[in-house]
Length: 479
Image (cartoon, rainbow, N blue to C red; front, side, top):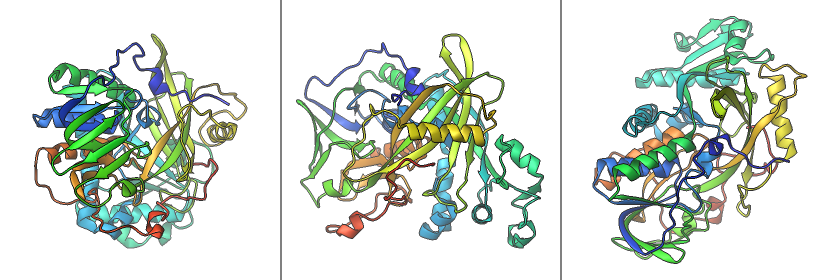
């Protein structure tokens, strides 16, 4: 079995000087978690307010989920647009999707302000569809987008499929019929079974390196208002009426606001002195899923790309799929390769389970990913692949597959920017900008991202309700 070896952490500055909290202090905003959500929340708060900001990180900057993802940037929800419309209504769901799509501009803003020169590729990515149910799912989503005034996504269907003539007329103009060869070419596969392709804007970026460079910029740009303390775990947050006390081992921080930008699985307790209990609720807001990935180097003779392969005939974020990304990567200095990353196995972390970054990768996971590369992605079946990187990371899934952004209803001193739901980069940036608006005192319309109001104590049934994933899935599986 292999160790957890991420290509993104491999690229970080391992000689960078770190600081641990060494005294009690006061601040306007204390952010818990130095991943992309915490860094984005700090960036936009510092830029658009005059507040003093402190980030507290239990390990090292960007070494959590941000340093253990597949590096894919996408502007959609893993949960389908149609289901969001059914729950929230067309106007509200459309507004939410537009907010995430517009977050490409937030990424550009951070990149430009910080003067970054790290690789960031943006392109038209693809998703391979393998059933009529999947095609109908995307047809209806495109139909609703068009009804809401949103741009629909490019959808093609193979002329060889038996159901082409059965597609309802209401979907005319939002899909095209093409040859099977065109479908396979976009998906870079000769494998049989893919009958259509949904295409939309995607990108690839090393989000850990991105966070490192943004933090270096913030420390230089706001030396009197920004601090980062690593190796500083937070064990307890005491919420009072007008401020909070953050217990970080031997020292405390008195903060006017606290923003949680974590996966939700830390040994963290929240005591609310001015209202209903928050601690128990917080620990049931998020369910964990551990994702596994492998990466190998090849000649740099193909452009960057991100492709998903939906092999489960039933659409939905709880169902199986595999995706890969390809981008230039400098493994050894001045030697350029393409790095192909495949995310293909995951399992649900039960309530008693503990996740450890240092755990090795199960051989079964490596075999599943290797099987995909040889059978679906265009790789010679007998060619042995040397995986330079094999890694895993902990993702946080909310109960409805929508990120939680904003103040805790029981005490607005506490705010959240959490719940990657498998797709975390752009939603984290949107969350950071929205958090800054809350902290600036702006009045904003409610969105699907707002933390739901709760009264009384939740029932046990409600607390343990499945969170859009399969809790029985105790073994790694294709995801």
